[in-house]
Length: 305
Ligand code: PMP
Image (cartoon, rainbow, N blue to C red; front, side, top):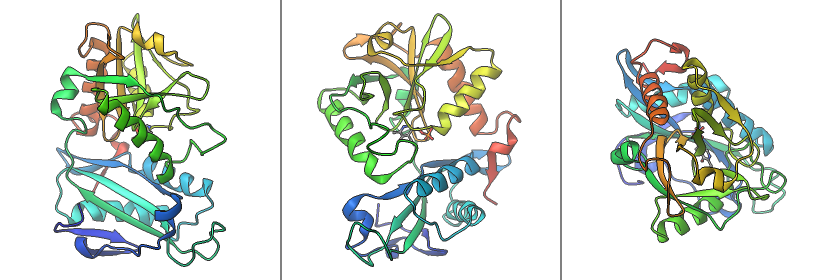
């Protein structure tokens, strides 16, 4: 990743990719307090457009606020930084990674006197789990690692440190022959994937966990809107793992994972064992929206030029 052409927006300037480095005593590297976003830009008939840019920027600022990190830029500047990162790298479609982190001014946990830095990188990243997964679905295993408790790490924040839990769960899932993990909350109810929100479909109704242990996903919120517009009923509630086993369909959502069907959980086939009709409908509506195949929700697509 570090060795490629292009530029990265770094504290207000576009710097050559290979020179976008930081010191090994950077505070965030040691203790994990930093916040970030994952954003996508898609090629649309009007040009390359960032999907739900403002929602991602708002969540980045909310995440920073939760940790008392003062971002030394305005939201408008961070929006512009993201547009520039895509545009100046000549990308037609892209994954964007804005991140806010502490500098190397001190090593104490007090975090006083630390500078707050911001970067935005953008590069081409295709389907997170491969094109095939979007059609055939993936195999999932319930994790032995519990998802965050609301009073241990802050679950409304997309925080760097939260992802050690995600990585443990994903390592375990992959070593057990699955593609992704399903994490349960501290009370044993279904929370989310390592980097995705989860949905299930039963008798035509779509269910997803309430936002407590899981991240308040922007794709999740987009799917809730699309389902409403398609006349599909959605219920946000506590879900047990065996409700997922007996669901007609299940799928993950996320900026990276988009809408990824789940065909198997813990060795049990979900529904017909392939992408179900409701999942397919929502997935198609999602891709039509992000790629501007529909004129609906034009306010969610910000052109980079
Ligand atoms: N949960 C976790 C743990 C994630 O990392 C992500 C990806 N940001 C999501 C859910 C989905 O969030 P979004 O749709 O905003 O990308």
